[in-house]
Amino acid sequence: VSLNHDYPAATDEELVGWSRLGETEAFEELVFRHRDKIYARAMMMMRNEEEALDLSQEAWVKAWQRLHQFQGDSSFATWMTRIVINLCLDQIRRQKKNRTESIEQLEEEVGGVEHQLTIEPGNPTEGLEKDELRRRIDDAMTKLTPAHRLVLVLHEYEGMEYKEIAKKVGISIGTVMSRLFYARRRLATLLRGLQRERDN
Amino acid sequence: MKLETMLEIQSSVDGQLDNQRRQVVARLVSSDTEARQLHQQLTAVRMALREHEPAIRVPESREFYWSQLERRLQVREQVHPPALHPATTVWRWLAPMMGVSAVIAVFALQPFATTGLRSFPAGSGNPQATTVTFSSEADGVTIHWIN
Image 1 (cartoon, rainbow over the protein chains, first blue to last red):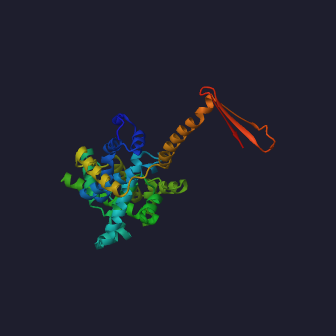
Image 2: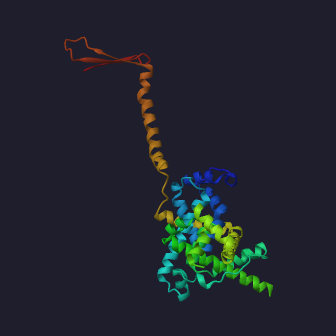
Image 3: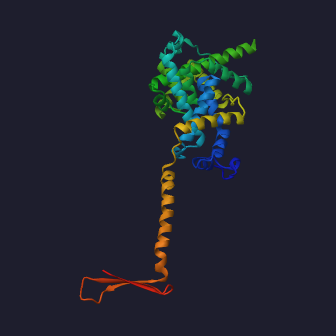
């Protein structure tokens, strides 16, 4: 169905309205506008291009089928992001069931390793150029366990509070705090290591 | 430093403490070197993450990404057609029904617009009986129903 609307000039809300009436061109425009953000969120959580592509597409399929549930309480981008996050969480849970954790991963997840990281003075990101820092953060995120990365992404990029994360992931607030703490300090250590590499 | 204290410093960085606890942590951070260093480290990492989110883009062209998605949608719709908004579903049935009703009403009421319909007791001996008279001047016809 196409009614020759000016899709690129339309607002997200208008595109959602037309998509609900079956205008696939309107939905295509929504996909074009937000596909990078949705894919980026999946990629940040899964750290696997193939999985991230699959889950981001699955999120769009779900959105198309549930457009009538979008009430406009939040922005369309936020609504979409929540869909992809839920899909990633389901996938992580499925993978966790089938995965044998390393001793290090298990230690990290139950906590107690926080003390192993020393507190060093100074800013671990100091002196790094913006693009370099962005790249380094991306690399460092890959080195975190899925459980730590998940909490960090939900808190830092989705702006969720401890309580919300605990509810969404199905863990206690204490575990959220502990994982977040470990993840941040590990990132600080990784970034500092990169800083030293550069200085030498 | 105890883990609880470290987590409390983190909660302060994240703005998750009440006013009273925040002041306690602020005092600790200003008086204790290790606490201050931890506060600085956590703040720096938090700022770096928020301000330098990695720029990740879909590694496929718009057309290719959409064509893949379109295929998925077609397959899925054959199995589970998309649910329409409840109002849309009701309207889908209501609109044709209202249209048909309107047409029937127009045809049914049209004769009465140009003709007269009167009802009065029949002049017969039966007090229960009534007569309905239909007359059309245009057609030159008068019909009487006696009940």
